[in-house]
Length: 93
Image 1 (cartoon, one colour):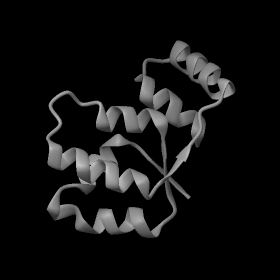
Image 2 (cartoon, helix red, strand yellow):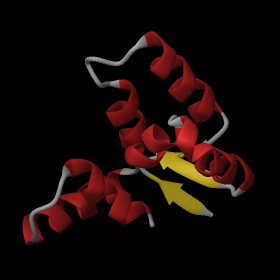
Image 3 (cartoon, one colour):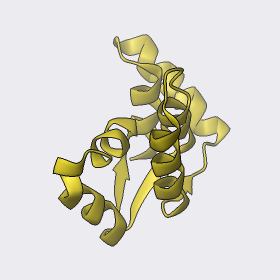
């Protein structure tokens, strides 16, 4: 299993990264709900990009985020500087 973040989803949309797209589809990749928000929530997202991301996300298992993960991410962010998304993803691994 591979846990991928929003950057991997975004990079996979570039034609030059068609192998990355194939890797995601063939290797039991998963995504967190936070990565979905980061990917689809970009305010300048074009319709074509949104369609690609939504189609790809539909093929990936979404990992649920429990209260335990939330509080562990809080402790992680309190101990060192990191983004919200990274603190949560680290707890899912």
